[in-house]
Image (cartoon, rainbow, N blue to C red; front, side, top):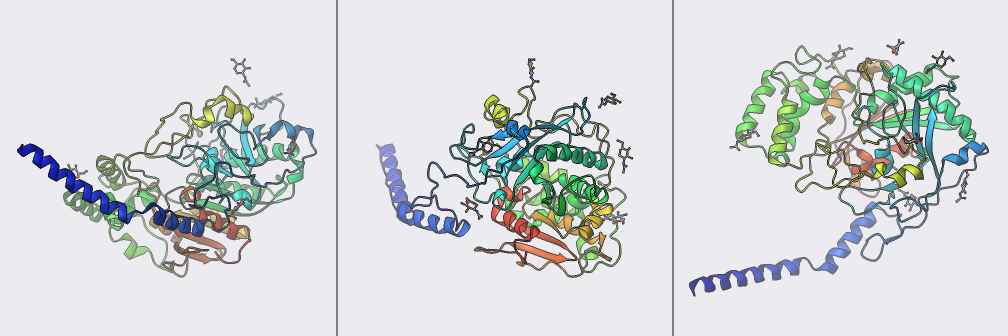
Length: 502
Ligand SMILES: *[C@@H]1O[C@H](CO)[C@@H](O)[C@H](O)[C@H]1NC(C)=O
Ligand SMILES: *[C@@H]1O[C@H](CO)[C@@H](O)[C@H](O)[C@H]1NC(C)=O
Ligand SMILES: *[C@@H]1O[C@H](CO)[C@@H](O)[C@H](O)[C@H]1NC(C)=O
Ligand SMILES: *[C@@H]1O[C@H](CO)[C@@H](O)[C@H](O)[C@H]1NC(C)=O
Ligand SMILES: *[C@@H]1O[C@H](CO)[C@@H](O)[C@H](O)[C@H]1NC(C)=O
Ligand SMILES: *[C@@H]1O[C@H](CO)[C@@H](O)[C@H](O)[C@H]1NC(C)=O
Ligand SMILES: *[C@@H]1O[C@H](CO)[C@@H](O)[C@H](O)[C@H]1NC(C)=O
């Protein structure tokens, strides 16, 4: 009897909790708030129902079908109205394999798809970041991306260097010059087929390790003006490799943990241990001592190594501790918590997470639709090394980036503030240590809240000097067009001259 009474009391209690919960979460009131929020983030999108949800089938994106006169172009045509698992028409595009040179026995081929860490596939960009179709983590099916960069321009996604994604052949690149020469070789073959694109304005973009590729490719194009019949105007790189590991990973790591203390949720004993190492290794006061606007001369290393001195690898300590307390901890965006969202591409997260097989780009129907080789195994990031002996090139701030900024109309660097793979404060250090257009670094500091996204408001920090514009984007992880697409497309509009202010 006693026990029953007990249960009864408990049940009453629970009922009343639910009742008040329900009052505060009136579904209509929530739907209205949500519809309002969605309007704010996508004022132009029409195909939503009254509650703000996407309707089943989105209309065509209205992408123009360019007519290519070379009959060879048609073998690459992709029908966007009939694509595996995509239930809307994303317009025409072209995809397939082309060799990196015109020699008859060339076996190395890069894969491209137009439409809009080394060795990671550009199809991640196409399919989860800035393409017209996107399949976000945890989502049941692909949806139309209203922030697609194909709204601004034709986009060419190339899986490169050789060894990446659907590309064919054995990697031979020793350094970034080799990568650039091979890509330019591919472009020549591409423009022979798609002749109508010759002479067009051209922008290069990429993220992460493309902080190496993109400036080196641009520099190669600027120094071989007759190699490519395209007008290079500028580059865009997101969360890029710019300088030494110690700068982009170690120096800012513990300060980053303090900034997001409640997200990491480390225990106090561990925090004290981190602070001690941070101090011992010369990281703790590095920013206050050396990060000046304008800088006071070249910035020193905190120790002897460009990676980390012995006992100073705080980045890995933090990563391991973060995974201990939060199994969903995602180095690419620190806000992710349990449960782990599934990803149709299997990666990136902190570790590969394949819940369905095959991965989307391993499906035979997808390979056929894109004219990829049915026999090539597609991996989001390849398990073979695309630089068989390592990449011999130095980070771009020490070499080619200054020249590229000077030769380009605009250069845009964006950085997500929730990225732990490469940390924004480290990018600040790398940029303050670089000399371009006659001066070292930015002369004035980034102004807090100075990046304003249209229709939303302050979305981070920004500084623009001597043709280089650097954005730091709140709430975004490593893949900016995926995590803050409204910020990504606005920075691209600025790069392309569609807007005068960043
Ligand atoms: C991009 O184009 C599509 C289709 O025309 C449109 O629905 C969408 O609102 C556009 N997005 C932006 C950001 O302009
Ligand atoms: C688009 O152009 C290609 C040739 O480049 C052609 O094969 C295809 O049928 C065209 N598609 C539409 C929808 O007009
Ligand atoms: C292609 O063949 C030529 C000789 O016909 C040879 O010189 C060259 O090294 C070959 N290239 C490759 C990539 O095998
Ligand atoms: C890059 O490597 C190639 C060999 O693959 C070599 O010929 C070239 O000199 C290297 N370039 C630079 C800038 O180191
Ligand atoms: C700054 O640049 C110089 C070369 O100009 C380099 O030797 C030094 O290691 C760089 N410092 C940092 C912190 O990257
Ligand atoms: C505190 O965190 C560290 C690092 O994750 C861990 O090794 C240690 O066991 C934790 N201590 C407690 C009491 O949870
Ligand atoms: C794929 O492999 C099969 C069986 O080995 C072979 O017959 C076919 O020619 C290959 N296809 C391509 C495009 O390499």
